[in-house]
Length: 142
Image 1: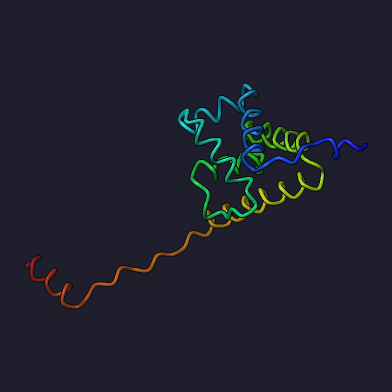
Image 2: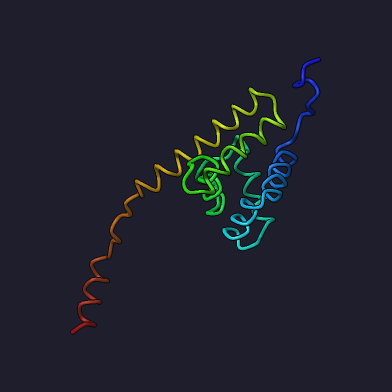
């Protein structure tokens, strides 16, 4: 019997909890996530659950979720260089290789989308002022 047949199917919530527990057990990752979440670990778990949900889009991520995705993918700074391989190892420990690779690709796609949107913010249209409001504003200034 292969090792993959011995692994139980995990719900998104159960996998999120296991990732959350692995992050809390790592001293450096725990310290950084405590800092960026303002010690709101329930929000960290909720963010992880959202991140690993295949239906989640980048627009649905919280600011904390976007920050965690960056740490999971970008390999920026010491924490990114530690967290990314740790995250991958955790996934490979709990999921079959095809499942873990699919989830890694999903998180990478979230990252690319978040990163692209950060580099290309939507231009907000100039506020339109009705002509009568403009006339009223001019009269008040005089």
